[in-house]
Image 1 (tube, rainbow, N blue to C red):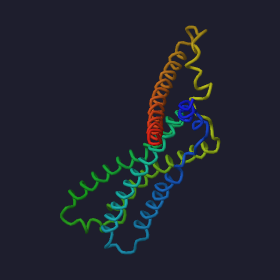
Image 2 (image 1 turned 90 degrees about the horizontal axis):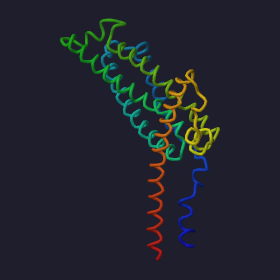
Image 3 (image 1 turned 90 degrees about the vertical axis):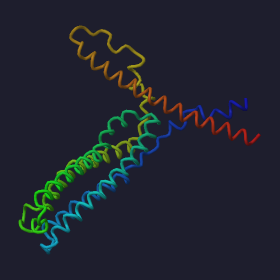
Length: 247
């Protein structure tokens, strides 16, 4: 009887019944705001910076700023992925899948743009290696700084909407406080009933789509159960070690 009472909290689903907010909005807001500041800095460097002789300096400063921005985006992505992993363990599989690409998009785009910046810098230094300082100042529009600023603008036009869309989805999730997907009847219905009964030849394509969705949900369920079993096993080991120290 004592053993049953001891292990009852481990095997119960009380923890999954209590919704835990996904606290990533404040974290994701950091690269969002820094991206806006990076764009404003580029506008200042291109249009307001007073000294023409410093155009090369602002070009290199802007490259340094983008490297720092890339590091921040990478760090934020790791933090958000860790919190989403906990969300998946708690059974919110649909939200995890629907936001996976939104999490990956900023770091993918920032890394791709780093490659573009490197290629541009190599081309410019190779074609103007004799007097790069004079090349920075000889034209009002076709300067290395303007090229970098244009690329950064295109980059942020992809990254910032991805962050905004992600923040909206997280805020909606926290506001609705839905139950885990694995406890909803409509999510589990493909596993418990035949979804293809009564379909004739016309419904063949629909059957294929349903089968693909079913297989995807089965894979999500397997991953969820595997992670959840690891979590429960860890809690059982902690509880067993705690009982051993008491005795």
